[in-house]
Structures are given as structure tokens and as C-alpha cells.
Length: 140
Image (cartoon, rainbow, N blue to C red; front, top):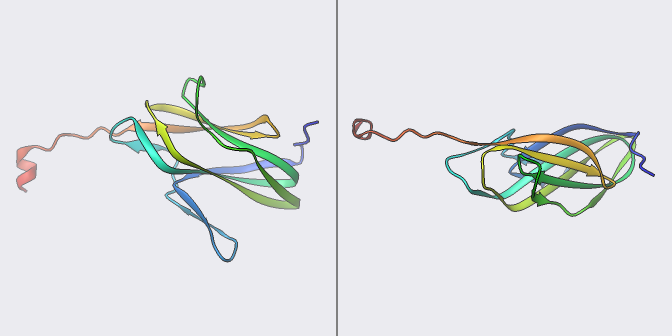
């Protein structure tokens, strides 16, 4: 039976990396809401998804990144267990390594809890249009 009534996803953060400090606090590096690149395909050495949960109970989480058409997975995490203490909170961090994006668009980041879809977030992947540098701009 799926007991997720006591679980609430407060927020999801996308970033380049996450470090756990000696104080048990998280340090997030390269926080972003989109990926902007000069050309595709692009491979991200590290890409992290941080989910902040409230409620209580023990759960099994998975994170998936799907292509904009929802047809294919770009990356799928291994299931990881986390516990939210009663009236407490928990952070679940998923780090993907060498994740490739081949086309621009709104990729879908799915969070699964106990093998059921719990939440979806959009991750835009955009090409930045770079103007060619003219001869007069190079001289200045």
C-alpha cells in the first residue's frame, strides 16, 4: 500500500554539485533553474537534484530525467531510502554523472516515491545565441 499522505515535497533545486558540511548542512554549488549552453549536444560532468521533504515516514525515492517528449529517459537514479522524522524534514540528494542532452527543450525531472510518480519539474535546456565578433570589436 502506498502511504504518502504524510509526505510533502517543499521544493526541488537543480545544481552542479552538493557537499555535506561537518555541521551536516548542505552546500549547493551552481544552483540553476535551466541549462544554457552554446551548442548541443552537451554533457554535464555532474548534475544534482535536491528534494526537500516534510512529513514523516520512510520512503524509497528515484529521480528520472526524461526527454522533452517524455519518450526516453536521459538519466535514471538508483532507488535510495530516506526517513522523515515525525513533524520533521529530510533532504534527498540525487547526483547524476556524465548526463548528456542532445536537443533543446523542456526536459522533465520526475520524482518517484515508492515506485509511483510523486512530482514533475521542468528543466529547460536552451541554446544561447552567440553573435559573431566583428573585426572592429576585436580591435577595441
